[in-house]
Length: 125
Image (cartoon, rainbow, N blue to C red; front, side, top):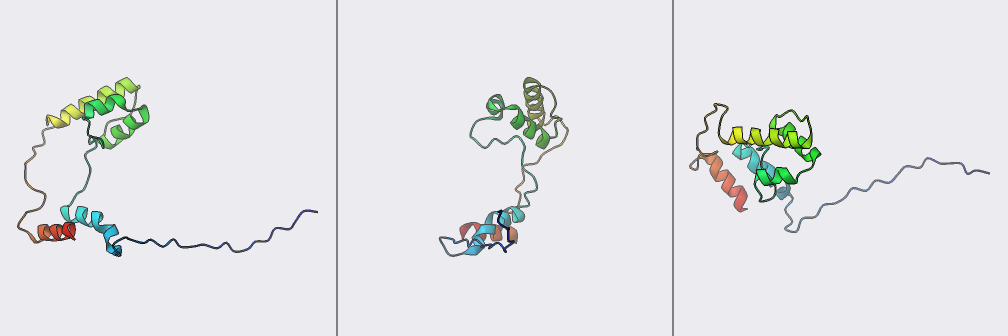
C-alpha cells in the first residue's frame, strides 16, 4: 500500500554573514567607489590576466571570443579564425583612435574636489 504524501511547510534558514572586522558597510565599498568615480563602462578588451590582448585572443575558445565580440560591439559571426581577426582589427582601430573620437588625458575626478576627498576617505577606511 503506497504512503500518502503530506505537504509540510519547508524550513528556510537565512544565512548569516559575518565579517572579520565586524563592519557590514564594507560589502558595498567597491560599488560606492565606482559610483563616486563615475565608472560607467568597462573596456571590453581588458584581459583579466597580465598578458596582452593579442596573446589572449589566441588562447581563447570560440564562446569566449563571442562574448568579447558582443561586449565590443562586433557581430560575433564566423569561424574562430574569422572572429579572432575581427577582434584584433577592432582592437587596433580603437587603440590607434581611427574612429575620430579625440581623447583627452584628464583625471576622472578633480583631485581638489569634495568627491576626491570622499573617495580617499572610503579607500583609506
